[in-house]
Length: 187
Image (cartoon, rainbow, N blue to C red; front, side):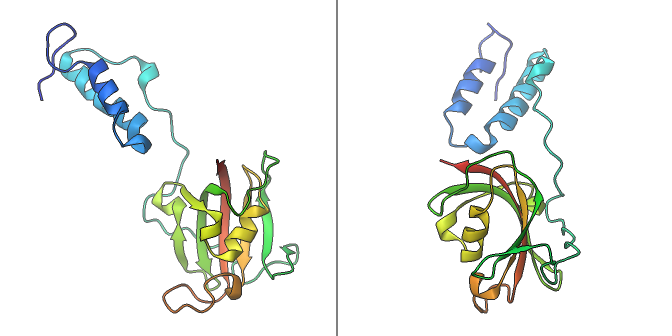
């Protein structure tokens, strides 16, 4: 690729920025744009202002990390709330919102899941990126449990097998435990 300083021909920063905005890589756009612009600016002999630096990300576990199970992974504690379906939950961090997601909503969450023997089987935290789910397309224990939450809340769910994978041999067995943080109700 040929790069030249402003007025010298080649591909300019503004053209690169506009071309990238039109791409399908929306999720990576801000960080990727800053990285590409920094390289081009360096090659062209000038530096980007400090304001162009990407914001510091919240700390997350390294990709592939095994998140330790909570101490109460084997069974819900006495102070957990239990619904009529058998779902038990406990608020770990209170949220700031007032709206609860509906089963027809999509939600953006961070979560980690364990079997009751403490083996982690899935985690968006370990992958380093939140997940977006339509609540009517997940296990019924998730649909019910996340509907109890508000944005900003972190809750531990103990989901009985009948509300989880109901004995499907290709899925985790028995009661499942999830720590879920509701980041956003996606409209």
